[in-house]
Length: 203
Figure 1 (cartoon, rainbow, N blue to C red):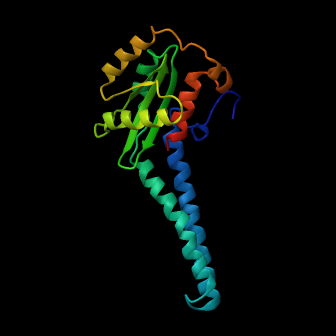
Figure 2: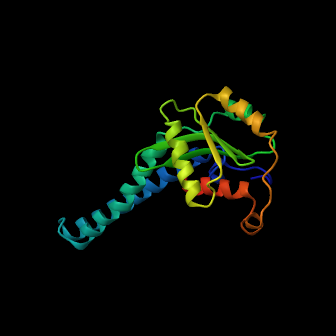
């Protein structure tokens, strides 16, 4: 691979294309885990001539992480990353903002698929193209997460209409940057802290 090029599988959380790379990675992992459990079971069955052997128990226990991986895969398959055209259109309005893409947040009641996020000057904006996403519920969930992590003063707004999201992006680009405090100097700039938290609580 040439220097400067990048494979989709190398995408990090919060980057465009991350969900697609995760789907492939989790699919491969799930297949390997189930294959290993099947191989252990067949080894025990062929050597003992029946299911009543220790390797059968090992194979059954091995299905637990495989099943968990399969559940994660099902969740990921239901999510779509941001479209290239939408991402390019939004990118024309994010100068000076910290940007994230392809995030999926989970709460006890719901999952929230957020295709694009931008932060500047104490304002965290998000856009979802999923019509079934509960935007208000996502705002409440993220406010709670921010409050628990010392970022309770962040204003959070989630949009379901792209034009409205872009208009709000244009507004926050005119806001002055966050003032640097002693805490920011110790823990990193506030934008970095906010983005780090969003990546940490996303799938």
